[in-house]
Image (tube, rainbow, N blue to C red):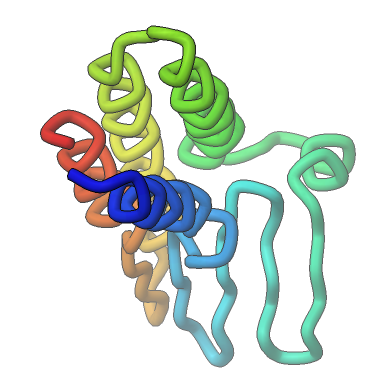
Length: 139
């Protein structure tokens, strides 16, 4: 494999690995849409944004399903750090495992947000993280 091809594959991998920062983990549909990202939530109606730290500060009696949100964010952050450490010899299977844990954490968030009537939650993060975990493992 040429050096140029290897750099291109590496760039593509890093773009894919950073994509959960801009692709919502959960899309919640009610009368409007709410997008859940690792860094916060965006309500499309009015474009209201609340960051994860601000949400954790103001949340009183946080629903149990949303307790998984910061844990999933932490797993994803560790996956980013571990993927960077792969350049100095860290095992890529740990990156894959951390991404799989992030997928597992995003599932209860989606299921907890979908329990109310007239509300639908689409767990994009589960599929997204599992695809990234598979890629991290087989590359």
